[in-house]
Length: 318
Image (cartoon, rainbow, N blue to C red; front, side, top):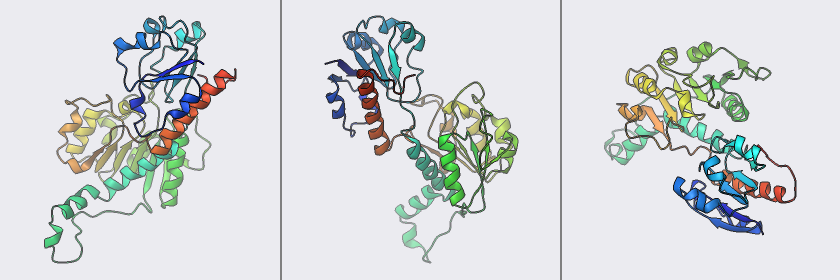
């Protein structure tokens, strides 16, 4: 039986059943692996499973039996693909497992901000509502999605899913293609400037590359409506965090929801901590991808990648 190790199972969550991997070989599971521990843990392995542990020439060169690396994610930047190609090590990844989870989280963030749910929840739990003189309390007006313009940056699979649901809520959906390739869609393609100036909600679902890095700085944010909210579920560096904090403090935009950050975990000196009105900023710790169903599917897909490799079949090879 092949020797298999999972270097960072903690990234998948302790609630996900990994027993399916035991059907495929002699499995060792580590919750976390530090850089200093990598060589010792992979040197005798035939198959290595990793999410974020760095595998490069310095440690891979010590793993003489290694035949397959399974990445429990879509991104492959933690593996030296030049080295693996030169040494005949197969690398696989998994795509599409989190699409529904990210789409759902996009709307969860949108509603949290649009309906001022933090404010209303605190109003009731602080017992202020107990002293109210009428049955309701409209302390902060909120608006319906119907009739609003939802702008999408990056109309890939996730962006298209968001667009369809936004349309179902009665939104006018427009999009900006960061790659320039998605130009045959049922939605209206516009320039970035037009999207910024006309959208009531903007959600980002683009990858990070030379075209999207630092795409939204203060110069772009000031083009948005003061009533607009910005949602980033793409990659952290697409939005300049210092400029976003400035825009929120200067009331340039109404609010922002972020599931991705420039550094993860975020540093204690992150400029977003300087946002004065905390209700305007909603941050989650990179969990949009991580519904129970998505993580379960991810492990099943990794198992299928291994099973296919052992049969000599090509499946999700990078």
